Length: 180
Image 1: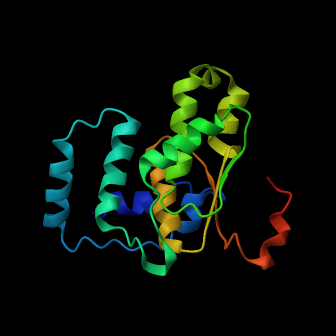
Image 2: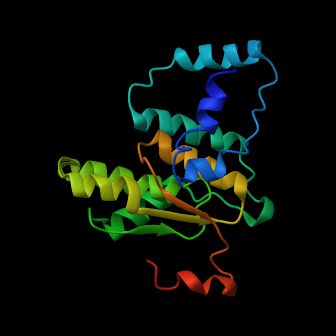
């Protein structure tokens, strides 16, 4: 407990990443080392060989504990998100933004689509760098959801998403009008 949580809190602290912005003041709520041991042992028994499986488990757990319906937050069903992504057909050079990202489900679906339909993009250093640092943008006005979304992106293999604490519908945010 003394080593793992500080590692997560300090992930990417060397730069201006989503993790350093939103995980730095996170609070570890597992009350005892024994409880953490039970949780880790339970997860260790699961076959979590790839990022998709880890991310899917994380999203499943989110669906059980999320605050859907409070503060106007609603979780878009996975099949709707996947349909939206298939219809938009993201490309390796695109910039993808979710203006009310919540747990980052839309961004996760977009990155999964790209991995499945454009696997060769990761062979090109410029495209791989774009994928990990410049492709994904998300805004939310709930700091807890920003933490959840940042962790979800990490578990799905996106190194440095651009996540901001911002109300996308506010007229005060006209400074980003031409950013994307």
